[in-house]
Amino acid sequence: MKLAILSCSPDAYSTRRLKEAAEQREHEVKILNTLKFAIDLERGAPDLYFRQKQLSHYDAVLPRIGASITYYGTAVVRQFQEMDVFCANTAHGINNSRDKLRSLQILSRHGIGIPRTTFVRDKKDVLPAIERVGGAPVIIKLIEGTQGIGVLLADTVKAAESIIELLQSQKQNVLIQKFVAESKGRDIRAFVVGDQVVAAMRRVAQGQEFRSNVHRGGIAEPVELDDAYVETAIRCTQIMGLRVAGVDMLESRTGPQVMEVNSSPGLEGIETATELDVAGAVIDYIAAQVDFPEIDVRQRLTVSKGYGVSEIYVPEGSKFIGQTILETGLLEKDINVLTLYRGSKVIPNPRRDRVLEPEDKLLCFGKLEAMRDMVPARTQRRRQPHVEHLEH
Image (cartoon, rainbow, N blue to C red; front, side, top):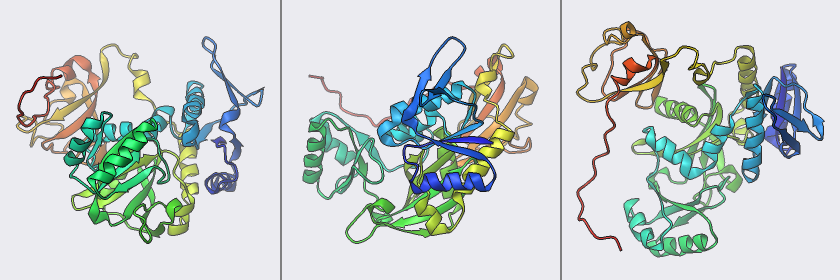
């Protein structure tokens, strides 16, 4: 395999370890500075130049895109994708994860546990927003901060107001988030590769510091994760459209609460804490994908007219509850179940004797007309009644 690692920091621990792991497995690997590419566009012939020379062929690309170059970096990754080069993380997945607000919006939609969060711009909305997340203390986050930078703890409502006003005056977009007190300055980092958690560590903040990031002085220790944390980490990675990710979770009374999904997770902290070859797991996964690539179903939808992919929801009271997939008659209607989503569990290629439960979601491929008849009309979330008022 010929592998390109996209990185502006060839001497960084993570970049060096990935190169070393690839070389140990006798792959050809080059570290290419993401900012040294030129993107050429022509009808039917997308191309890339590196340091003024046409780029040679690569089998796979491993992006290590820093937050400061997200726009250009994802443009380069997207060009590799258009050239049919396997990318360990896609431009779409990187963009989803890089914006904290966007990532939480996506995870919330899919029923993932997250700390209660609000995003406001008008000064008048700040106090009600703080009340809605449970009152002070609250966490205030810059939407595009990394490594704990731009994450502040406000102990009082007054302090929160002052911090938010200052940040907004500097044209910074901020999130207001519930402070999960029971986490006690600790969080979990699960390193996901493909459909597996290959390593996990618990990070513990030191002294008066509430941020547990290793870059902020936090201490890391290996941890065995419960199934709920493993399933949440894998599902988050898939939902965000990533294949390699670090998923940060708080340990709350109600189970895992996801803070962030990192598309360029560092290796030093987790390899040191766990003594596992995480870099090797990443390289092995990429090599396997190059040898046996996944088919993007969305690119094959036009092959058979009238066929496609859709999601079928099984609500409370559905006639399908208690039936096996075979008994539902889906197969007789030429509808194949690709994946079953049940809570935080992802069950690919479920057995035909799998019994359906309330709130199951079935990702299906088949006749669109037949599936359309089975998808219930969208229902709006029921809201608490409120007093109508005139808008000024």
